[in-house]
View (cartoon, helix red, strand yellow):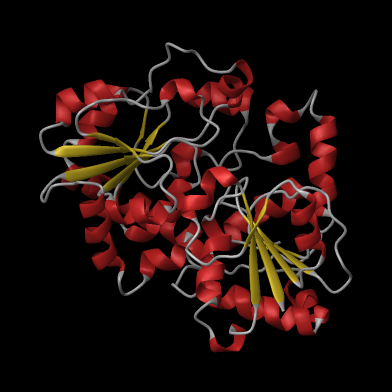
Length: 374
């Protein structure tokens, strides 16, 4: 059997990485050939000995067309899928913001791109559901008629693994975090209108690193995790106590290292909630993002596991007292986890691999999962 993996433009990351790592340790998959579509820029993130082919080349197309199983977390370029090939689309997060044809800003001018993406969807055999609630918008956004098994996300197994506490300390040491410091992970999503205009070269991050350092810098560290589509104008901040981890290959390392997450409309909060640590939603442009840029599948102020705040100072106030933040958010947090984290138990990768193996031997297996999450 040959499995070909693809993640985010040629990275070794996300659900495909977790599935590959788990497959390498399974006795029943010891004879499988594993091949990644890789971009040279991200070559260092691939473990030594990993077989790769350059993404966007004829060699990559040949790998896809010879695969027994294709695993991707995003859309692939066009290839001819063999009749015996199983294409597993893991996607890359529970969608809070509207995606694909559901997004408000996709209404005009993007038909050619959307048609190309729709063409990829026709090759999917399986679309993973992170939860019952999360599977619904994923199926709807892609108009996907096939199997949507609610398996949880393989990448999240690491957050619940027996060695998670040890890994937390290792990552904090690697990042240079001194003992006793409170680590704040700031992981905002990207804005379509910023990307479309190339970003403002004088732009400042809404959670201002300078103000953070001034207010909390003595005993806090800010891990800055910017989306790969965020304009470069916002990168490379040289501020004491602020560490740019945007290129770190595994965000789960950062979830484990952090003591609190600050995000906005990113899917990060659905994964981070597995840690049980506080979450702050910094929604400074909520109305604009909801009504103009993207729109939402869920009402953020209603479902958020913690406070939904509008200003940098409000966020800093919340970060200054995490015990109070936990107490105020306890009921919201529990409700959020029950709704969006119920399928996560640390064994999602095995569930997905078992499903893939069964479906490869008998495609009718997928028929039995088609209604899950619908």
